[in-house]
Image 1 (cartoon, one colour):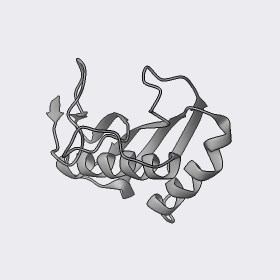
Image 2 (tube, rainbow, N blue to C red):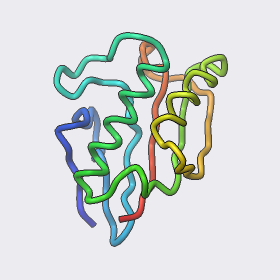
Image 3 (cartoon, helix red, strand yellow):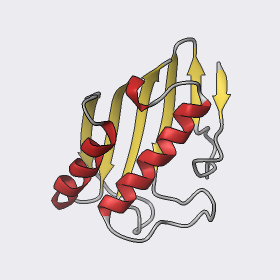
Length: 124
């Protein structure tokens, strides 16, 4: 088991790792829209937050020796179901023709400014 760290994603803000690699699998923790350079939430709505969370995930995957093209499954947590369409458009652009398995849940977050969180499992 190897702990994965990337400066292209925000540091873990709790007792967890950005990702863990085990053999050919990488388990990426939930990424929210914190700017890794400032530690602050990006401005804008769910589209901007989705893009930042996915960019962080991409940085962690790269540090693990893989990419978004090898993502097997994601889980997307959104604050409000009305945000689904905008989140989904940004998500679809990010992955392009690659379509990993996915679950999407509407949920509350410990911080009111969090609109989306995305975790992933990838192969490498």
